[in-house]
Length: 169
Image (tube, rainbow, N blue to C red):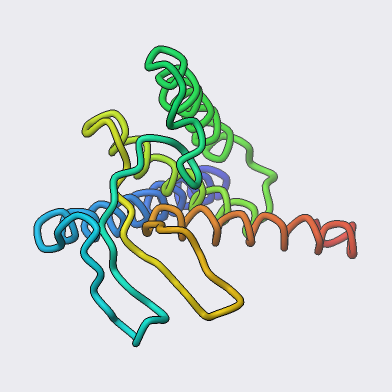
């Protein structure tokens, strides 16, 4: 009975984290779509942190934007859909995964679903955050991208700790 409770709790945690990341992403994108004009620049913290609404029909930093539509659909929609489905299946069903890996994968999956939802529904992904700290500057990104980056950081931390301390993994 304890195994069932543990498995149910873990699955609930994973689905909650995925839905939380999707929700944060979609709520922020909805607000930006309604209240920010295209290419408008709203200063949040001086020139260092701004809101700038753009539509990205490619992937990371608009890569793949110029691909033919059928190729773009396969690589930016169909393939990610399969990878995300496999990822959620894997995280929900592999019982021996470390907590840090589960949380990291849940963030990556949630962010991936948030961006994929936009791509399938709107044909592009709404990006709106920009950071400029002089020597460090980002492209325009969104909350789904933040979720993916946090998730990847957690996965990398898991791999580092697993390698540094194999008996803890």
